[in-house]
Image 1 (spheres, rainbow, N blue to C red):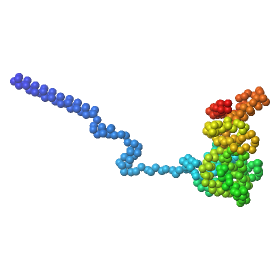
Image 2 (tube, rainbow, N blue to C red; image 1 turned 90 degrees about the vertical axis):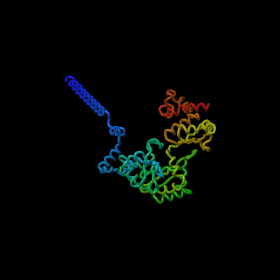
Image 3 (cartoon, one colour; image 1 turned 180 degrees about the vertical axis):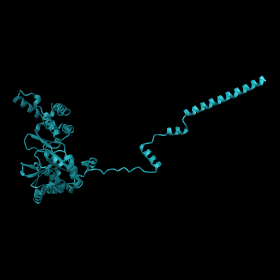
Image 4 (tube, rainbow, N blue to C red; image 1 turned 180 degrees about the horizontal axis):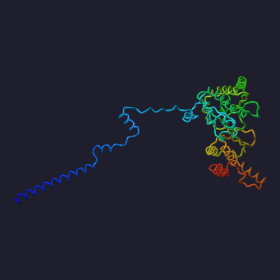
Amino acid sequence: MKAATSLLSQQSFSQQTSSSKGTLTSRAAGGTAALRPSKTAQQHASKPALSHKARVFTAVAATGTAPPPVVTAAPSIDSEHQARSINDSGLQFKFLVPAAVVGAVLGRGGSTVAAIKRETGAYVQFTRPGTATNTPRDRMMIVAVESREQLPRAVALMFEAIEAEGAIDRMRTKQYASDKLFFQQVIPAICAGKVMGPGGEDIKALSERTGCSVVVEGKLPNAAFVPFRLVNYLASEPQQVAAAVAEVTELICQEDKYEASIREVSSVCFRIVEIPERRVGALLGPGGAHIKSLQDVLRCKMGVADMSTKPNSRFVSIWGAPLNVKVAVDVVMLATGLLQQQLAAEDSSAPGTPRSQRFPSSLTTSRAPSVAPSLAMSVNGDME
């Protein structure tokens, strides 16, 4: 009896032990499953994050409704002006106007030139002060159009804007007639003959038809080259000026090279310097190497006239931006010995004046530190 009881006790203990082991095993397995991510979660984790457009597309696919359309505003005049440059237009016409009327033509925030652009299709732009004219009192105005027929109306609107701002008197000049409007157009030198005609007959007839006096300024004597000419308009009414500009435009556009030539006329600053004939070689250098180097460094065009109206003298023509031309004039004087003669004369007349104060301002280190000193040393070395 005791043996049977002992055997039953052992069987019951082994069943409880097996049950406990099974429970522990199932709990361990459950814990491991809870810690280990499922296969579906692993697939989602391996996919890259969706972009904004992809999420919108997914949302549209899920809901079946499209998002509201994006409305794009029409481009404004300002954005169109920024997208296109004035150089994109095929034809350019350039004029000289007093700096005092530039604000009237531009308008507040460029509103006037924007209005001119809307009505005529012409771009109007001004060069920066002191970059294209001999004096800061004048500015160069560039009018760019697709067709030359757009120009006269743009000029008329310019005069209307100036008159509306009460600045029309700034367009008058005492040099010719105080009661007349004075306007200047810059044209390539090759177009001067087209405007004047044989014996000047064409320009005379043009003046009579329009009621505006039109004169092409003559070529400067002793000039080595002539890059541009000025056409002067003198009239009582703006309409007369616009009519004359229209006829001159028709004439200059007959020149095939006008479009390319006018783009090269970026300045009307032109100087002629007289030098001793015996010093021409020092300026030119072997085969013209020195003057070519000066042109590259100073970024201006230079040339020595073959003929001279004054014995024992030659004339150097210089054309470019005003500051570049000023530096070039002083360098030419240095290369030919004229500057040394001038300083020597000033030494004898004013010995108490410091030499640094008499030296040309364009050659001081504050104005052109990378150009003038090196050129001065190289030219002096060549001379000696």
